[in-house]
Length: 289
Ligand SMILES: [Zn+2]
Image 1 (cartoon, rainbow, N blue to C red):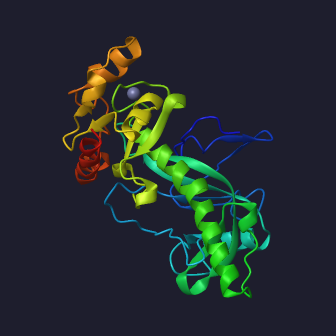
Image 2 (image 1 turned 135 degrees about the vertical axis):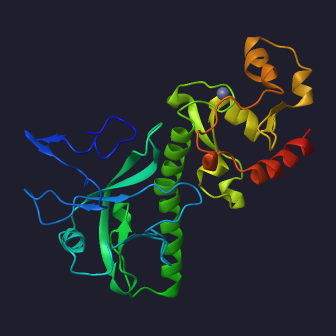
């Protein structure tokens, strides 16, 4: 259905459905329905907020490990909130468009879709809905034992991490680096990863400033301390590797990078790698020599 990786609101304004032009998201708002088809919402949007910016809506994770989506405003009877409630009552799947950054040189936001998602409960006191991103999350029990609640919380957290936060992290990092490796500028998204500077397991956040777009070779080399990156964005190659002689891959892809500055960085300073996280990581690179 949608072949590009990221879309602007404009891209989503003229979607062809059964010979009709259908808008998949509102021109500005977060909650959208297609008037001709339904009284229920079909899509929700979470706008991109630059690193360090204040988010108008905090789509947080609840104590049950599931995601939340805020009402529009504070009035439960606002049309947008009524459409959301209809989608929940009718158990209709929605598309969730998540903002990942600005289109180059503009203030046009780009979004990646998550589909399907369902609204499975409403929390009026917090003015939000509970969002399920997986079939298995659609049935939320409230009479379970503490043990079952704990198991399901952990399960939900894992689903949210692997199916929501990680794909978003990848999309946002690749977008920020214009789909090129930070070290060698290789421009093939299929061969690129969003590498963590501080790993997920060590509590590193899934934010662009804790990421680097790296090709498979440089990701592997970075993770295994064959390559280190200094806090001032310079590439260092392990001494023992520099002293090794082999074919062109080692020569050009690894050894010749020693001492070079990162060749691809995000345009926006706020999205560039966090120097403190790099420093912490670089100490480990040096210790591994
Ligand atoms: Zn590379």
